[in-house]
Image (cartoon, rainbow over all chains, first blue to last red; front, side, top):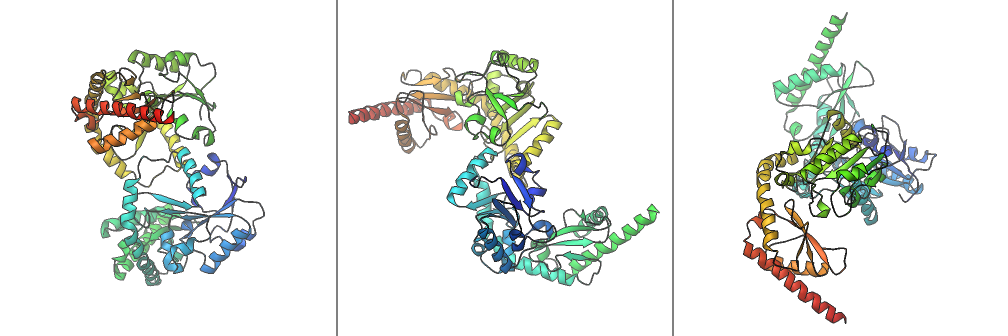
Length: 288
Length: 288
């Protein structure tokens, strides 16, 4: 509003681009530019390279669609400085912000410093009822309220959501270091299964993308078998990767995987690879 | 979308006009015409008198801002026929639809028949967690989902809201006739307090506007006294009426007033009038 510039920037895998039906254009008459490469995080150099005037830039920490990648702490500081120099407002998409603390080993207020506005979610990492919070200056929040009302977001009471977030916040946050450590352990422990590939290779938060050498439909079939046999849902829905004969899924490490022994995790992933490979072979033979 | 006509109609006291910061214009690029008089309900004759092309018309049953007024059943049928003849889609704002059944003495599906889309709320009359439902054809709902997502309305789970509505719906609906009857009784019983005026004079649902012969600030002061003395909050916030020396409040009859004896109701309203009149006199003497 204030900049008189309806142009903003975001990473090509931003939630706004992929999951919100281009609301920014349809509802808010905004234009966007993509900033940063598709497969890795947005860096200060990408901000410095922007040659149009943009009013605001969205940064997602961690970037979910690329396996939870994070810029290093030094790089994050450079990002903040670059945006500040170019008078670009920085908005933090912190849907999974809670998961970044073990990686940065900094307090949340240090991570958020330099952002003009911050969004955090309470249902993912915290496990509360669906709800979120927007933070910014008083003047910014007053304006946001107006637009929230226009979008139909003024709910008569949010007491249940607030209560559930307040109840769970401290406990859930205290678990984050353990989840991150377990993610690193699991990736390390599975490194002998050569058919598995992790992206990023070294997880930066308690999520990582796992690539499999067969089609998504086969992965989902084996997932259902695993669910039946081991009573554990290891992933949500495998998706086709850039290559049609390959797929990937998002692995999020929480209480479930914390309680599972290394042996059992290894057993389940071996089962996934062995049966997936077998079904894939059968399928290609049948197709001949 | 389908009509290629961004122009719709609604009553001048519609929620969209008064309480939603003109979202229809700011977010959806729609234009509106007011249909019907400010102080009474929209009728078929007002639809027939529209001389512009409008694609859709919003009807609120009951119309909250005018004391819960309803068109008669015959009139409602004429409204539906007029809209149909003019090929105007009818949308029902049924935030308080639940309260209309005792007046019409018809089933909800009969009341809603002829509307192309219907909105109902679960937190007001039903007392559930804030939540609502939109009904219409499958094709219409598919489109509505797209716009709901754009507006940020896709919530990860609505299970708590659905559970609370499902738990309370039948019981709450079964209380509506008693609430309506009690509203009529109360208005009848208070008719000897001449300084009170009800709008509409004969309530059509379990809500009615009550007019008081003094300023809103005085009414709110006495309301706080009543709350302290009788432990009952009789109304939310009195508002200035068209005349500055007069105010009104919305009286909604539910469990609270069902359990209160006629005598006590009379006592409380007498207290409200007596003390309000007294404070008003003191105030005007002090101002001389």
